[in-house]
Length: 248
Ligand code: 9D3
Image (cartoon, rainbow, N blue to C red; front, side, top):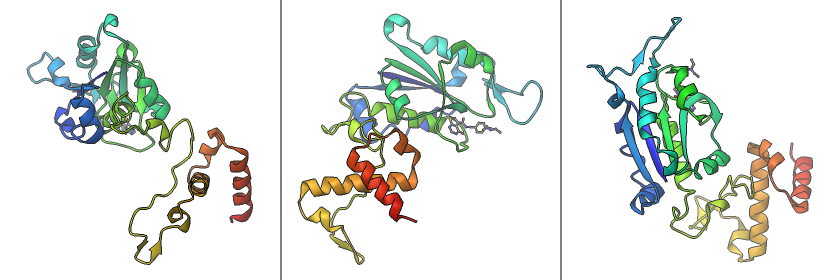
């Protein structure tokens, strides 16, 4: 798989992909991540990528020509595999695990990083397949959002996780749909706080039950909306009913 990232701050990406899973995936040729300076698709002397908004108002807007030229030169021809063009923007669809899984199925993802007040809407109409936001929080630009997308997608690529524990086991997997349980390691007592007894007992059925219940408690308290989509057993439902009846 390959990512082509188009940005006015290419140096921004010199750090984030040089560690951990992404670094290993790059070294193993599972993914190729190329970062491109939007200014290289300008033709004027000052490499201008933005301009004032028609209709007035604060801020600047990314001009259409450099972005459209970038996509047209980077996007692989269809015989090169399946390609998708993504724009990071606060107006985008919320990026989630399902979307990460979808993007992981492409051979190429071209990521356009929004900046300033936004990009000329004709870019979206002409070359963008998807607009993505990483959440209801205001960032300074699309670069960090692009890093989030790359990270979430790369770790899903076959061979990316060095260990055999599958990505499907994680907190947001389609399989549980629940938040993760608390974790503990040594020492068994830290500043007067002991690790829950059940984890020290070695009864693996009991441990699994405890972890499941902790996941249910956390999800109910912190992200109750996730319970609607979660796969719950009869035991889970009984436990949650009891929890709701005895809490508050
Ligand atoms: C005044 C209206 N603002 C839109 C909500 C202006 C504005 C704020 C922040 C315009 C651009 C930005 C820069 N943010 C992004 O480019 C961005 C982003 C984000 O801010 N939050 C979550 N996801 C994303 S993806 C790209």
